[in-house]
Image (tube, rainbow, N blue to C red):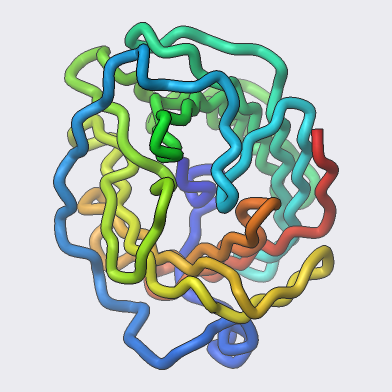
Length: 246
């Protein structure tokens, strides 16, 4: 689930702005090598609650991010619903994500996640709709569901993340191929909602979007707090403004 799919991510509007959240000096613009696709455990190895410290999805939780893309205001609302859906025999948590540009809904997505007994959060797919200025659906590109048409679930967040670890988060050839690398477990980050010097920082790339690199920051007990472009054709950054725990 790259929120860039909702409002495309690319390079930061100003490198100095990004520096306020970074920790370390490695080249974050470097693209990630291909990570192997992990084998999905049997359904009996999954638990009902996604409570990974770095990416908790507690039903009833709500997140609101705000930022800019190409100097236009953008925002994103995510709700962890109480609904579940069975995908490949696994009971997943249903997450609803809505992205806005200049206050207008531009993308509506439903995501499916589940956590195994080792604490790994698996991403089982998404149903996404891109809307035009009249609210009409103009595309469902990026939608995929594990077990359908060759699509496979991937690990979105490891149970025990370590620096240098790479994961393939999703897979549907030519449509959903995000990879992520853990860059730091002690990154500094500051948003209107929370500040931390012990954030987890990742970079994400996809062979579908060569030359595009995004960075994400996660805070324990909350989840994603910043998404920022590092390299690519766009100019976007989103920061967590409010969060209510379910």
